[in-house]
Length: 159
Image 1: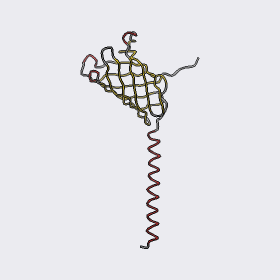
Image 2: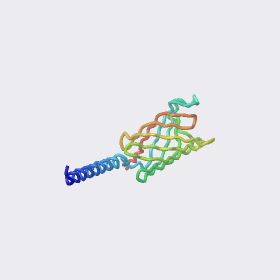
Image 3: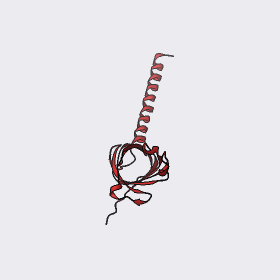
Image 4: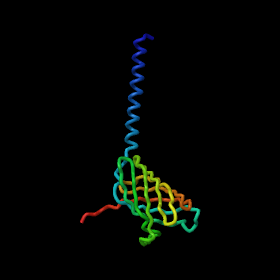
């Protein structure tokens, strides 16, 4: 084969690789781009499905959370406001802080629960159902518990 044809084929192969690498980069960018803005007030409801401390099994807990999003980085804080559908008095409420990342429709959060006796840590792994709702699972060092989570935006209505 003559040298000119080899150079043309080599140039074609290099250009093709560059083109496909660019397409892959564009796909990865849009796949990882946050699907929405979480900034605002949310309700977080969890149900303990499994735990080392049997009285917690089946417990339903509600938190009111405020999220702040910068690009794909998430910071949040709030407090536990309910247990099994009953509002907690202020003296029984505990603070929760979260840090995480929104990648596409996936929301991953690490949390610290500042309990009255001790701090516990854990994680939430959530997937967007729509712009105002996420669902998923959680696990925590507190009583080695895990279960399901539903995160719902508090939509402010205008009078």
